[in-house]
Amino acid sequence: SSNPGCSLAEHMAREASSSDVKPALLRQLETDGGLQHVFVLPDSTGELCAAATLMLEPKLLRGGTTVAHICELVSLPSPASAARFAPLDAPLELIQPLVATAKASGCYKIIADVPAASSQPFLDVGFRPTQLAMEIELAPPASLLQGGVA
Image (cartoon, rainbow, N blue to C red):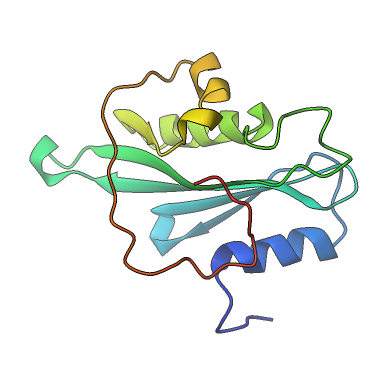
């Protein structure tokens, strides 16, 4: 059942923590005609421990080729997952499927919006710093997933 005041990430987090979830089963939800993929990673008890969104962005100035954009990274290690990764790190179980989905979608590159404190797992799988990211926050994020990293 869908709650109109509930974000997609919140809905998936509730679903992941309230349903029969096999340990370390990554869930993927595809929306917007395949242009947005939300990945939710529960820990061994079924509690949400990490989530991220992969957006596929067709670039008109590059002949319609596609870039993948990892954003909305949320890492909430629980006692069951704390031994696997630090609170601000994204686990490889989350990063690898994001990269695989981008490759399978024919993307020419992947951009990851990751705070410097959370960058090591991305560096470990081949990401490299390239540009300065800047933002203007127009409204505070409304989310039940407090403690997210990006």
